[in-house]
Amino acid sequence: MIAALAWLWRWIVRHEADVRHRWAGLAAHPRVTALRTRFAHQIAFLQARLSPAEFLGLDLTIGAIILIGASWIFGGIAEDVVTGDPLTVVDRKIAVWLHLHSTPALTEAMKFISLLASWPVVMGICLFMALYFVRKRSRYRLLALMLTIPAGMLLTGMLKYAFHRSRPVWDDPILMIGSFGFPSGHAMAATLLYGFLAAFGVRKVQAWRWRVLALLAAGLLIVLIGFSRLYLGVHYLSDVLAGMAAGSAWLALCLTAVGTLRRHRAIILNDHGD
Image (cartoon, rainbow, N blue to C red; front, side):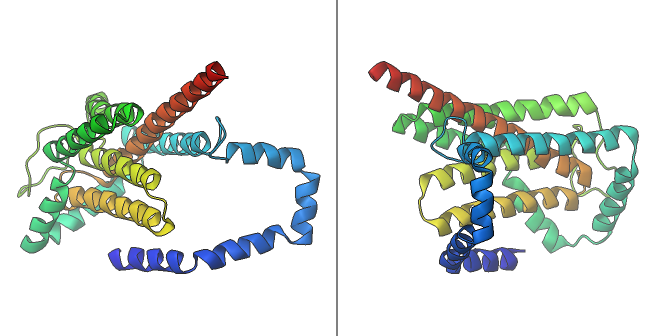
């Protein structure tokens, strides 16, 4: 997976100019030009929704798509878990297979990876970022951070108690955890924390290659942490997928809401300034 992501990153970086050139050539094609002329009003509406400069532009559009999609996925998984649909059968098969094929060396590696989304690590990184935002006087980013991670962790606990799903039970468990398992708190925390860091990195850096690297690295960490919870036998697959979906929905909601608030207040200040 690491090798595949590294290759993908290098390919995107090396072929950025070629991709842009091909896109420009496609846009200049006579048939495409005719369609753009015919549907000029509709295209203008879409461009406004996809423009970073517009108040209801790209950020809100992407946020709404992620929020709706992730919420729909979480709802589907939750329905399968509650009704005992075939997904729960797959859960048990994967859990048993991983438990039977565990090895001491891989177990230690998975424990370390799982630690990257533990409560102390997540809150420690969150506190460090909060102090950084306070120093930079970046109040909107601080607000987004507080809503995303601490509030998101509270949401995780509420969801666990709402569904009351037990964790896998083993005669020889690798880890012993007494709380409920759905959704996975580690998977949701990883999605919130590293998703927020990736979004911050994309905003902070301008180089295309580093933006792509930030997104790929965050995605890899989230997947590895989710897999570590499966391997350690403390969650089912549906727990992990639901945690990622719920984390993505909450992350999109918080970032989109704070970003919309910031742009709205900027418009009001500009109007008063005029």
